[in-house]
Length: 342
Image (tube, rainbow, N blue to C red; front, side):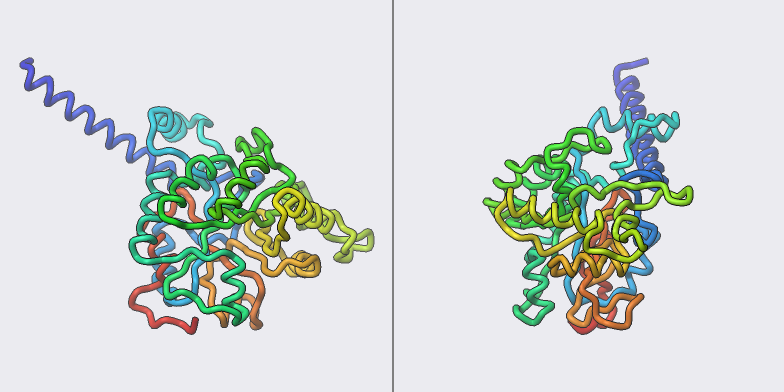
């Protein structure tokens, strides 16, 4: 075999190998989802975060403000990543953790933030969004709210530099009782010192994701979010003396003690709560509750399940299944649909 023939054969082999990795990655992304009993489970009401959900998003009118929800971040395609994906897909090896469903790569995050920046989008804090909804402030022509849940160290290490690059800010919904925890569901949470520095810089604002309620318990043989079974008294009534309310107070106090400010916004673990727990949270002083029900936010915002305006705010979850065209639809709404009232 001549040198040119060997070079051609090597090139073909590399191309085939690259194609194999791409196909394997795509197969994993399409089938991946955390175990239903996992503390990182996917809410059953979560909009399909893949091109399967394109048709529904394409019917969503433009206007209003989208809230985007991120969780964890990773570097681009590395040799270790390739081996883990191939092991999971081709050999059925348990090499990919539940968190992978919720993980965004840095190149993809940079692409999304650059797209927002180049189109003149401004990032709002939750307070700025709520002030607009309450008629206290005007909304920029192009606005988006960026949120990050849990507080894994990957957001500080990988996402914050991207936010700095484009002059953006995000709200972190933090598990206050797990600050500095190592190995929680294979995550390492940031500590208070890191959060103090990021808040002082203005790139992050910390709000509550509960103190220590991001877990599940067994009830009638089913894994159920802890906070949904922790809000009643001995007589079965929603109670201000319940473990849930004590947890919410502990979360607010931790943020006040460590960061020096009150918290007005709450994102329930696992994506959403129920009317009784929402009512208890509002009674404790939260201004708005954020969910993972996929909705654009408008001043006439009404949840699909409620005929009255609601203080809870829906978000679009960015996952490993979110393609870039889905991301654009989440932000802009349908380009050929008449804008709804904003």
